[in-house]
Image 1 (cartoon, rainbow, N blue to C red):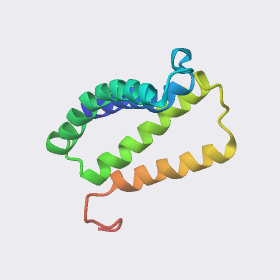
Image 2: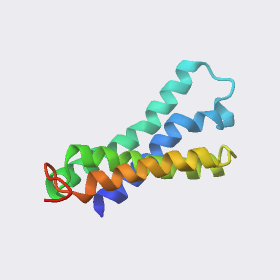
Image 3: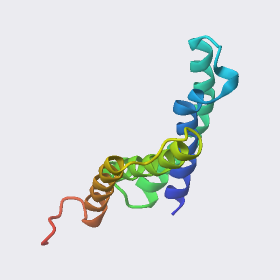
Image 4: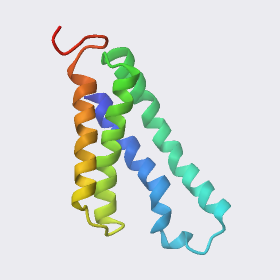
Length: 121
């Protein structure tokens, strides 16, 4: 559970770093290098949560690197959907919803079976 909470926090910072500059009014007229530096500053906090999340999941949580990455991508999408809806004011259309459902299905396949096992073993 610790890994999941840390990944959620990390992804909130990541989403702000990558997409926040599209709506931050104070960055509108700034040169690109200022926007990049601001994004790096925000991303620092992403790394402060992502690194311990991955270490906890891998060393204590029994997750593989593949599982951690797929979990992280699903959390990224959940956080982004909220951000796109609340901040970017974009609707979640059916085609995005179906795409996300396939990614959630990938998460199930990645975590439902022990590494190296087959569904019937």
